Length: 72
Length: 408
Image (cartoon, rainbow over all chains, first blue to last red; front, side):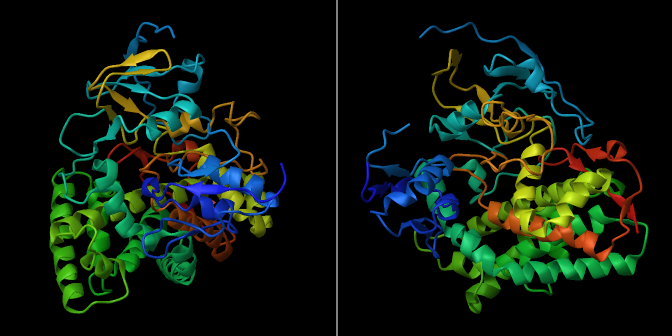
């Protein structure tokens, strides 16, 4: 599939471990106040897919999902 | 899905020589079937232990298993640490309450905040290098360097004034029982907790009167939830304990490996650009605090059928990072060997789930300065004894190094 990705986050589950920012810094950031996930770009380009998948794998609280990706 | 009979319980194979390079808790050999193992700990408490990466992640992601650290109940542990229950102590909290309190401190341990702290860490490390140099060779760098840097950095993050820092650091050391020469006094940890209580109460009052740009001030201003002084004390003590012994032992162990293995040392120091990856491999190779079977156990709050085993309500499960990190399904190539040039993968030394180590970015930032810098300052650094003979203590959260005596 080509075209932009569709990324969603469940903020209420976020445990502020900062893994998403390390995996995909163009897509995620961490709030300076409480360390929780900030979704910088809900529709990043296809080229971000490997980094978003890495963020999903690293996230300790299963906060992130990719719309066309069956959840594990 | 069929449910097997519960696995046999056997005494946990605790290894007092956990620091030896080739030693690790022999769970890998004992549990080739990849099922939960059931152990009897030295204190008589039974519990399951995970032996694979998938089980480690699954137990720590499952809200039916609660963290119950330091609630006064007998727990599965091969080590001893006597701590009173403290309000605001997040390893004992679960669910939304846990996340809310954790988030109050999380901003100060975020990737960005820790990056900004880089200069402070360098400064603290340099000061300790000067101290080691002034002490002269030979020296115990566990006491003079590895143990004291983490508590000073935590003091800076919390906002403990420099006037109070030596007492803070001294109490920090006694919370885990002190150094070998000080271990005769069994009351020392309780007294240290009391000292920290008084000291932090003073600091909290100072911050309420004169707010500053530090974590304690931010905690005094928290609104969601509002924290009492007792909760701020408990949380700050928690942050100190979590970031103190852990980084002390890991830094000492990493320095000891480089002293022991000239090939590893040459590779490590010869490619400074790769040091962050090398630190990850060292953290994977020896998840030292859990290699002894220690960790933060989880309590089943209901009966759970877990991959063919029925875990009864009230049963303990110990998530074991040491076995998860050498699971061949995530680390296929010679998993029990140290290989600095391994393609890095997300090891589980910092845990998983809602309680994933809050201070992991700080720990990494400290290690990547502490480990190389001592070799830069003292190019002739040599261990006074082989790593296999370095003494270890079983007082604390896991086995910890008792001393690391070096010459230069």
